[in-house]
Image (tube, rainbow, N blue to C red; front, side, top):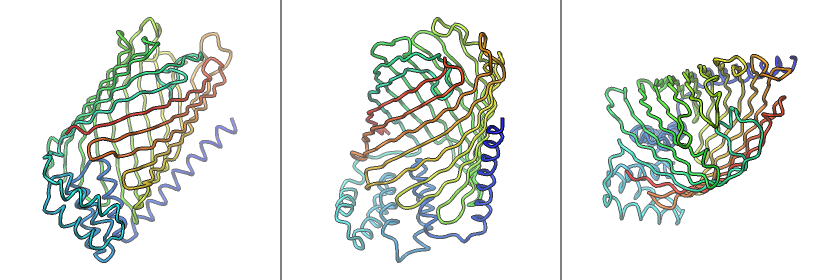
Length: 402
C-alpha cells in the first residue's frame, strides 16, 4: 500500500513539474530555433502548410544562420510541388553549405522537382513486412491471455489513407482510414484484421494554444470471428513553449464491445468503457525530439474482476543520425490494479508492465522507407497465469502512394 501511494505521489510530482515548465515557457521569448523545431515537427506529422509557415518565420528571425532552415523549406516546397520556391531555398542552401552530401541531395531535388505531381492534402501509404513474435498476444499492453509461450512468424500489411476535408480560418477537418491485416505462419486463429475511421477537427487559431478534438470507430476480427468494436472520443491540447518546447494534455473515452468466440469464449465479460488522462512534455532540436509522458486510466468492465485502474509513464527519443536515417527509442512503465478477485484466485490481480522498443528507419528515396524494429514487453503479475515476456522483431518497407 505504501509503495502504491508513493508511486501516485511520484506521478503527481511529474505532472506538477510539467505544468511548471509550461508556465515558464509561456513567458519566454519566441526564437528562430523554436519555430524551426516546431516546423520540422509539423512536417514529420504531414502538416506541410503549417510547417512552411513556421519555417518562414524562423528564416525571418535568423536570416544569417539559415542553412538548415533553407534546406528544410526547399525539401517541403519540393514535396508540395512548388518548384520555384524549392529552387530558391535549395540554391540558397547550396551557396552557404559545406556539406557535399546534402548539396548533392539538394541538386537532385531541384533536378527532379515537378516530375511527379502530388496533392498533399491527401495521402495513401502502404506498409508491409515480416514479424517474428516470441509470444503471440492480442492485447500485449493489457494482457487478457493466460501465460503460455506461443511463438510464430507473420506477414503484415498496413494501409493508411487520409484527406483534408477543409481548412478555413485556422479550423481544419481531416478524415483518415486505416486497415491492418496480419497472416500467421502457424497460429491462424490469431490472424487479425483491424479497421479504423478517424475524423479530427484542428483549431490552429493561436501560436500559444492549439486544441483538437476527434472521434474514431474501430472494428477488429480474428480469423473468421468478430473480436471487438470500439467508439472512441478524444481531445488534445498543445501549448507551444520557447526554444522548441511544447506541452500536451489529452483525454480519451473508449466504449468497448467484445464478441465471444472459440478462442475467447467469455470475451463479453470485458464490455465497458475506459477513460484516460495524459500529459506530455516535448523538446525539439535540429537533430532530435525528446518526450516525457504520464497517464492514468480507469477501465470499467461488465465483470469487476476485469475492471482496473492504470497509471504509468515513460520517455521517448527520436534522433536523426543522418538526413535519411533516423533512430527512435521508447520506454514505459505501467501499474494496473484490478477491482475484484478473479474466479479461483485468492487475491486481487496486480500487473506491472515494462516496455522498451527501438526503431531504425532509413529513407531509400522520396517514396520508399525501410524500417527495422524490436519491441520488448514484460508483464509481471501477482497471478502467475498473467506473467509473460514477449519480444517482437519487425522488418518493414513502406511506400507513399499519394
